[in-house]
Image (cartoon, rainbow, N blue to C red; front, side):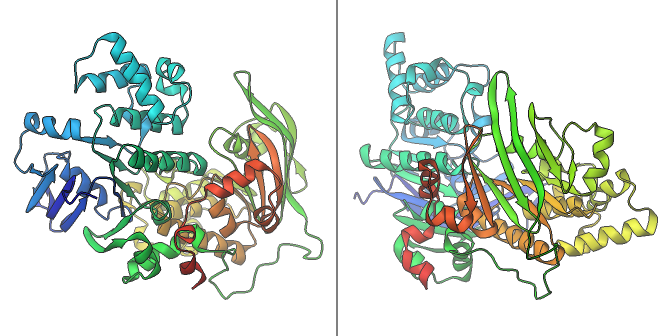
Length: 546
């Protein structure tokens, strides 16, 4: 491996200017790192740790209000401090390929994919139409996309999330870079698609001799492929070293906490952290079905999103519904809570058949079944404070007024372990985990028996995700709740669910207890999902056994 780093950062400090001057707290404080040819380095940390700011500073991509200081910011051995954009473009463009986090906002929705890649190619070289077309197809093929000619003709909205992310990789490869920087490239993707993207980055590192710098909040994702790990917290590097060494003998409590938060670090279901007796959910000798979905089907534009799906959810348990995006699992969830109507099939909530009820007649059912959305930021009204958000269903369903309503809101805030000082804060003033706690509190306001949770932890850092999952387990233990838990991640299923149903192309391919499905999966597709679960246990098995 060459001694000359592709990227070298020495003692980087970043502060953001505000109206009152520079921020008192640095976003990045004294960070130094390097990436060499053929090396796969991952920078890991929770949101706000400074990992993305570090990389954007090194590539001179931060906004003007950022104050950047460093002893060195080198690309290909050239210190780029103080360089203007035109000079930077001659090194940064051809030398570094950058893969951003969100393909939904990074691709031009009105341009065909091929035209966008060709535009990137022509930024770095002059090519005629025939040569340009050949290069576009070659980059799509290199990024791992089957049928490059068809993909080149398509618009972004015609592609899946994983395909769009691979298009961004193709664009990043347009200049034949020596260094590929990927900023959270898989955080919005399903586990099997995530594996495909990370496998492709690892293959490019080998076949092209690329240096790869991966930014991620998920230590499990980084553990399987990285040569070196760099762990950041509060703008500082708290620990770094060879992957196996760092995972088998972490020195810092923060690193140990990140490792413990990875779903694969747990072989069993989470146990309640509270000592209170479990609330009774009925006759324990004869468990009863509290939510029944029978032969549901739903089509959109002639495409079957849900195809003859039947699920029985037992009172007081968690039933997970698993599949990648596009398999119909969120459609099932929306049908279950009355947000959408099935084309055929029946739904029972407790002993009431609710199929085809009008909005007015379904209203009383909402006191028994509630919904928790995937993205708490978009599901909470930004104009309301926390107290108003939680009180909204109490007012809408006529369940409490005046002092009783205020008392109930505070009781709910206590139930989700959120300090009452947050009552007058708006969603924008809360962290992702705090917002999700508010969303859960709002869903509990009507004292439902059933919660339908649609990817309720997929947008969270793994450490915050672990906190929310533990909260859900504790609430179920204390209140006898029943969960239909929608997720794409079998690692999370193992932590929280009693039973699991796996969907593919809108159809049930397997259902059973979590123990049976995990130890003896019957369907090839289930085995594929299990194999795709990232984790520190596969990188350093002895750590999990310790």
